[in-house]
Length: 255
Ligand code: MG
Ligand code: MG
Image 1 (cartoon, rainbow, N blue to C red):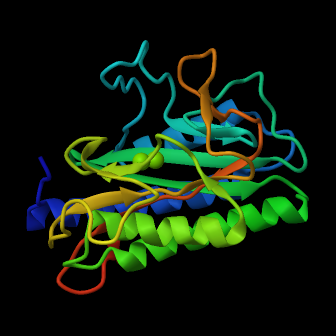
Image 2: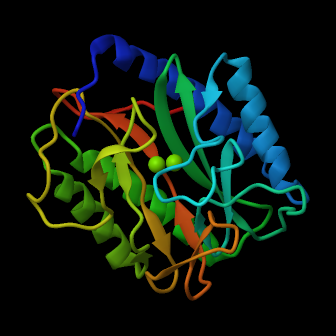
C-alpha cells in the first residue's frame, strides 16, 4: 500500500531531512585517508542522537534478513554497492570511493539519503562514476513530478547509465519511505514510460541510483549484509528522499 503523508508528518520529514543532510555533510568532511569506517558510523550516530533523533538502520531487520543491521550507517567501499557494515578493522585508503547511506528517524518519521565520496586523490574514472550517478539521481527526481509514473523515474535514471556506459545494479531499487524504512512503491532504476503507480501529492519516495562500472550482476557478502558487484567492478550510489507535490518534487534531504 502506498501511503499519503499528512501535512504534520511532512513537516517532521522536512526537519528530519535537514538533520540528515547535516549528518551526511559532516561525514563527507570526515572521509579521509586512514579513517576507520567505524569512526564514520560513530560520528553519524552521535550527531543523530544530539539532534534528539534515532538512527533508522541500527538493529533494522527486514523480512528475510539473517540478522539485524549492526550499525547506524552503511559504508560501502569500491566494489561494494550498498549495505556495507562499518568496522574498526577497515581504514579508508587513498583512491577509494565510499558510499555513505543513512536513515534517520525524527519524531517517528523516517528519511533516507546517501552520497558516494572520494578518499584523497581518486582516478578520473572514479570521478566520472560519482558525477554520473549523482546526475542520474537528479534526472530521476526531475522525472518524479505529479502525474508521472514510477516507471518514468526508472527511464530517466537508466538513460543516464546507458549513455555513460554504466550498468544499473540488479535487484536493488528505491522505495517509499516515511512511516517505515521501506514502504511501497518499489522504485526501480530502470523502467518503461507510463508503467507502475502514478505519482500523487503527499507520496514520499527515496530515489537511489546504484551504477556499476562493469556488469549489473550482484553478489552477497559473507557478513549477510554487504552487497557487492559480481565482477568486483566499482559502484556508486546517491539517494534523496523526496516529496511529491502539486508542483515540482521537493527534496527533503537536501543540504
Ligand atoms: Mg539509503
Ligand atoms: Mg533507501
